[in-house]
Length: 251
Image (cartoon, rainbow, N blue to C red; front, side, top):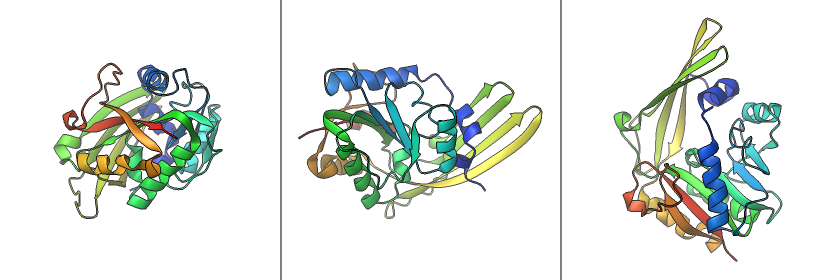
């Protein structure tokens, strides 16, 4: 086993789909549910290789993994290394923050999750929004959690398989994500396997966390699913899998 986040180049290929739908949702949500205008500055916690940093205007990001930060910087993205559970940026410097693909669940306890939300709240100016997407099923079976896809960029082909091991502990609220990357590059083949712990959330647990987020400095403005359709807000009970919360900075 290795850490697939250390394999930034292959990670970037695997997640290299067109980001325009996500970008458009973020910018429109900021304008319609936040400050009433296009955001000028954006912050991306868990920025990874900078996939969204490259398309969101005025965005800066951070990640704990140094390989991810190096890769993001190599593509011209402003990125720095920081722990998402306890980070600090200039207060009130951002109109928008976002974290879309379940990375929030890498924060494995309540203290880290709340510390993260407090850090984001400090970073946003009043009316700014945080678009936060994470799974709210409370732990899925291996079959229900399985995702497989493949992408190619130049001479590199990456086939990814991501699944939960079905080992969610409802008391500790931790489950294991297993990742397998099959990489083919210039005819050479390599397999990368990795396991990562993730915190689990039921809808009730997500609601309880976000209800008092950052001491009341963040409010839930709307909830969506991963179709990213701003004209279709949903009740949390209607969503299976990942919910996309739009949190607004108040005060």
